[in-house]
Amino acid sequence: MKPVVLASILLSFALHAQAQTSIFGMQLGARLSVQECEKVKTATTVIYRPAVNAPCFKRLWSSGETGRITTDTVAISLPIGQIPSPMSGTEVMALVLDGNLEGVGFNTAGIRTQEIALAELTEKFGPPDSLERRPAQNALGASFDVIYATWSQSGPVVRFDGASGNITSGFVTVDTPKAHAWRAQALKALTEKKPKL
Image (cartoon, rainbow, N blue to C red; front, side, top):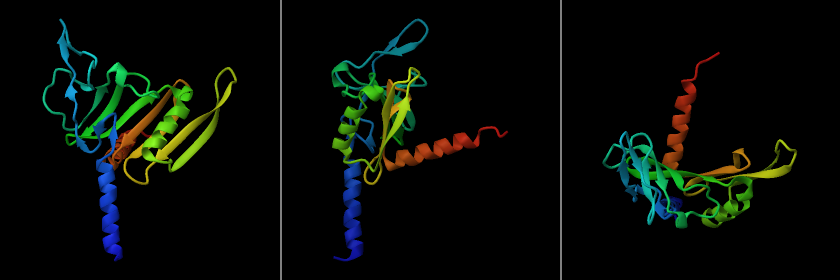
């Protein structure tokens, strides 16, 4: 088989795998498939009801807006019975670009569930491309390891921090390459705007 044909076949498999990546039952790289959460108008504002039977999204900046999301970050509210074991809270932050769900981020319960989260991410995405266990210590002197792992060789770019800021909160992001590039560009733009000494 010629190298060009083989490369084309491998690329099509990689693109198909990326297109088929789902998280919480939602396809990455596809149109945002959940409905907006039900709104309730109060005397001074509009608030969202939590998800009950199916996931729904909440606009973060203006709950008074209507229509399809094109490019924005929204919160996807999950019903209590649909929250995976390592996840902390009921909401997933979702990055929507050009109307498509391109990335998600969610909190974990920190070092208490980091082994479970690592096992579930490994089951879904395969062995991580990088895995570190960094020693850490709390204010009382207790020592423990914090897990940091990334997956980026094929399909989505996944990052897992077993603890993020404190031992009771970790973080996972799952991004398509498009979302990963968008986040990198947004971070670069923010850091370039910082005042110089």
